[in-house]
Length: 122
Ligand SMILES: [Zn+2]
Image 1 (cartoon, rainbow, N blue to C red):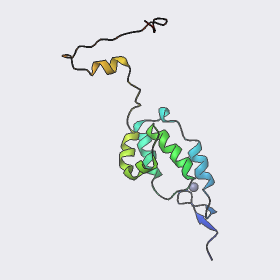
Image 2 (image 1 turned 90 degrees about the horizontal axis):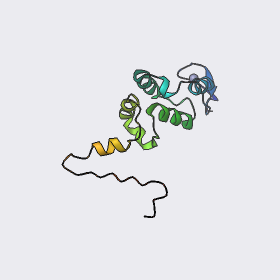
Image 3 (image 1 turned 180 degrees about the vertical axis):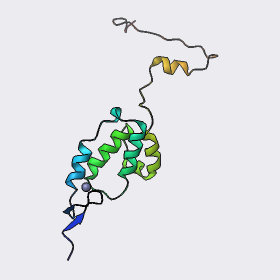
Image 4 (image 1 turned 30 degrees about the horizontal axis):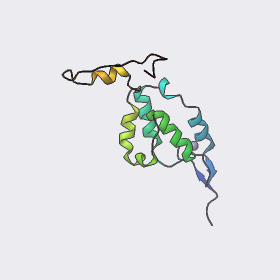
């Protein structure tokens, strides 16, 4: 007969064999947002997530996305070390017009056309 309980590998407390560890779930749900963590904190937490799954996968997936700072496909988790490194990167903002134009080589002429509201039909 199969065991009805197992021990959480972190808390060493018995939990239902098919169930998440309630303490691990509570811990994960109360962790700080990415912006309140240092790069080292994020990498340390990412490394701690490898190992036996003690929470529902959806909760783990959401936490990984929070630490990495973007949506993460499940197949990307196969390259775990890259995600750990990425979690340490500073937040990226979407490039603005100045960022984009500054990447155009200077020998290429650049015109910026600004359409005033109401002039769209001219
Ligand atoms: Zn636990």
